[in-house]
Image 1: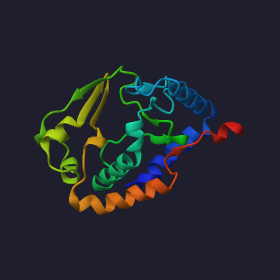
Image 2: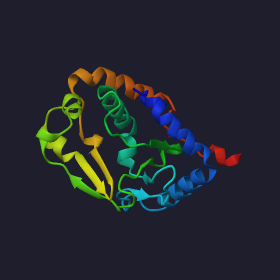
Image 3: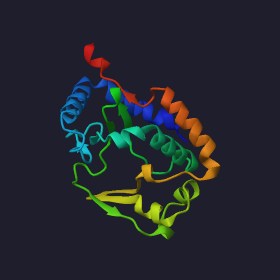
Image 4: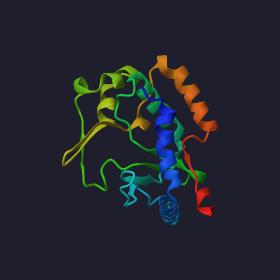
Length: 191
């Protein structure tokens, strides 16, 4: 199994080395910051497909949960031995300007389906998160497109880890609050 941090480190390096992409990311982020936060709703496609479709989530609420979501992703990765389908990118932009992540819908060219059958949910989700079928069902989606399918796509900010995962969750949370492993910086634009 690939180490969680290492898996994302390789993607971060690709993104961080691409000066044009970094310029586009931060320019787009600055444009979004001009919109009143009360009008910002949703996820914004960056119109790039390399290394894969990317977008920015400027939601202050989601940014405040960044380290928590990352910690939950790591637990899922480890509990599934790297098998669970996580986004290929999930990074915080410098100065907490937004979250850069893989755009699974490819600017809504792929359909998002709510997945409402608790009995069919991935067993790792049931193992890690509190067994409230309502929230697990409401937080799990499937994405489909031509010759494309992703499942489960999980909205992690609504789910709480079970008591037996609280200790490791808090350890990961503290680690990600102190380290910049998942931070995209604009400093390479000065080179």
